[in-house]
Length: 596
Image 1 (cartoon, one colour):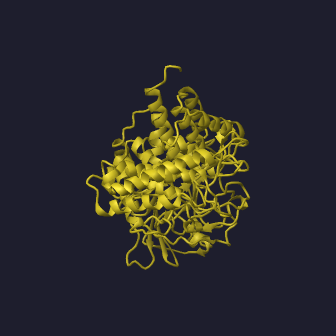
Image 2 (cartoon, rainbow, N blue to C red):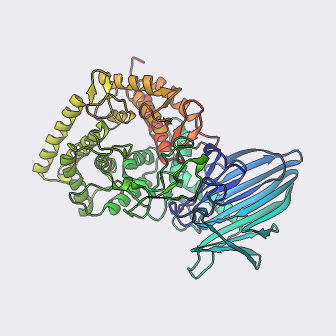
């Protein structure tokens, strides 16, 4: 059985982890303890790494959708003899509502099969494989529960469908008749925790998950343009949030490639400070200020006291810093794309843009930070002082180059952002001498970027000083207020990027990038809106919005020729880009310039 394409997957979440389910209602990815834990279903990365399928025995077509304002997925199969629906959800704690969802989820995956019309012969195949497919489990039945135990992991499955066990898998056949339902509840627990997994009633768990997600959505009433798309993306970002800490992971997966068969494959199940400011803006625009406040609290605690060492650029979901990377050599990889990594060695890099991202986030939340705690004041002052020194140094840049450090324009601009926000905070974080020092450095950074970032030969701001290469990261310049979007040189840069790196609205990061980078296209739409070209911004936004899969989900990149989604999935950065671009278009439309 061939694994579905990246874009054929739906996304389930419970505030602890995520599961992916393809169009055939096969669970191809689930790491129950937390986002970055080893998988128990990993067919996404290797046919033999575990799966759980429930589908018609014969030929069938399928359509699917989320229940409104939820991450509860419903797949409807149509066959020659009838129709049946499979409903999938990761369970939430019973009674959890609003901002409490995801805090104490039971680590349970529930599935219901309902006969809608006629009769549909169905087949279930349950094949857990622990430790990313390394370990086959012993399957034993006791008191109506099928247990799977190996290593540190235990799974219990309860269902009303008889199953036959052989070779570490369980298979069952049943008929979905109109008006009937069959239930499956799969719970996880550590093997040596002293207690078994929770096994709630499947129908009740689906109802609780539905009510929980809808209660959260009901608290966030975005009123701007593209309302339905923003609400869906806000749900996805919330689904990428680790409830106990409030941290938002970059993606739910590891090892999904930028190009099929390629080796640029990374583990994105961690939290990047680089994404921090954009995430907060998105949560703010999507009317989620409580989540934004939790985000800032999390990053302040994760960073702790910092001195002169480079600021860590990424963390685990509970604030871990050592994310040392190693490869899972036993996995074939998605479409043969190897290596499949666990961990991400970018944690060792210097990325100077994080200084601006944290201070920009703090400025956005300044009213929530009043009165400001001594810990937050010390953090912001230290970051501003680091920006005074760091802006002169090369770094790995926003795209985390692994070959060499360079003087990236976007990194300099974010150092300017750090200093600019520090000056705005003024006496709240520093004395008169501090503010004067920050202001002087801010002005020096700006003058240097305007002088050395611009390339007359290219007719644009390029990716790094003394470079002829265009780079979409410079689109942040108007987005952080470094330059107005209608500045002649900024407009020339936007035009050059669109002309040379874009195709059908999909904007690559640089020449040679294998596919369009979704957030870069949304950045361009936001810049066009800021420049007063609201109608053009809307058209670009709508073209990119149409590239989402049928459930409204994005990976990191989209192939410019085939339209295939590539990279880890779903990608929070892509959905954050959608929300922020919609907000900028809304703002610009409200203040539309007379010339349009």
